[in-house]
Length: 56
Image (cartoon, one colour):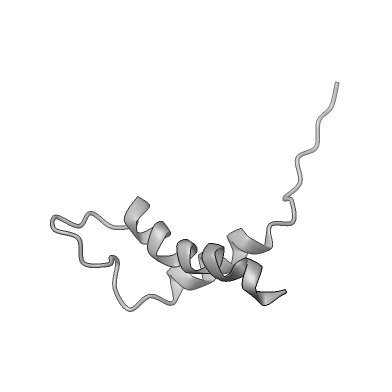
């Protein structure tokens, strides 16, 4: 059996990658920063999640 894997369409993930790439530094200022972490993803995604329903 042959299986082909393709990249799925994920516009929110693509937007997240663009936001992370455009950051001026590697973190959001946590003590002991070790780079990209859950706090960084939360800082980027939560405002969009909260405001998503208000755009309609």
